[in-house]
Length: 483
Ligand SMILES: Cc1ncc(COP(=O)(O)O)c(C=O)c1O
Image 1 (cartoon, rainbow, N blue to C red):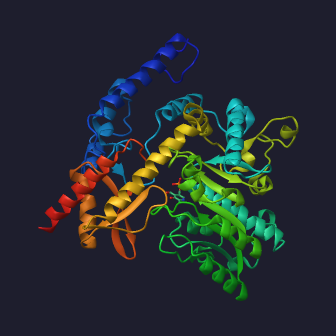
Image 2 (spheres, helix red, strand yellow):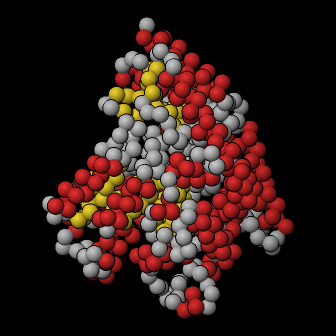
Image 3 (cartoon, rainbow, N blue to C red):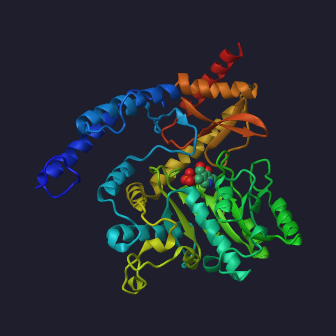
């Protein structure tokens, strides 16, 4: 029977008791650290650095569980950003559903790795089941498949990799996987919304194409890709000998939540022999809303889709997926290793998910989706999304009618970008003042060269009254600062 110091949870009573003690005392510490509704207690960068520098991070002799937990309670827990706070709305960064926190405990305890079936038997089958349901949800057809990722950036990199290899293989007859990039690599072009996520450029760089391969398409007044401009750019580029291979439509831009028109973009891609990837990291959750689903267009027209569960689905980080209409495109990531995913495995009915992923060792994040979908069902998620989107519509209308504020664009999802009618410096100061003196954490961005503030509404507990009270607070801070 293992004795202290314990390493793991195991079959002995002593190990089980230790596991329970460690976890229940952690839960108590977390709960006791929450004493108000604030989003952030306000400590400055130097305050935080000081509190950490006071103790030796790697002592020669460990201080043991109880003393270590006391340090966590004193130095770390009080300074967390509280994502569930009604005063937190800075980023596409959601609070975590409680049942998904329980999933995290199960995931960490059993520590399955999703690369091969023998490291994750039931976990593999759960992920396959969740992916199949997601492919159905997004209408991707009978040859679709998908895999869980660390989030939107990795899903976009995966989608764009498949686009590049598909184009090189089918149009340029170059097997990139075997022979590397074609000699015309620096002519490849990818088209995306002017305000799309920076993972477009990052992916282009990592894929050997460079930032210049990313063509930013002008946007209309609602920050959606201007389809006429897109068509003109593709045609022009083709005439100059460039190789347009992919359009990435953004289904919910990071700042504005604007939605590109996939139906029209699909028609263009077909006309020009191009791949269509949808970055739906933000907007994918809207597919569960009966009221608002039609705003997304038919995502089933896309060759691949980025879906993020750690945004609108309110699941803990990390949790994302890339879904693909034609599962053969995943062969980009398939390699066989004798020790891991033997070729004969599949014939015998074993699924080794490593063949679809950029990662080898990979978390069992699909459990969070499985548990939350089971518990809340489509209706539960529809209600969450409808509330957040309804709040954004309300706030945008309130601000539009307010003499001291201006909104940037009408929200299509749940982000409201607005400014106090004053200087850019004043708007910047308002955000810092809220952060350090009012326990309120909001976003800031630039729209048409002016500083704007941003509420990203992902918390279904937020009320319209609270939102208007925050606007009143911002107005009174602005007036104070203006004096
Ligand atoms: C539109 C969009 N795409 C991709 C990403 C990147 O997602 P992740 O942070 O999960 O890597 C984000 C992040 O906010 C995003 O807003």
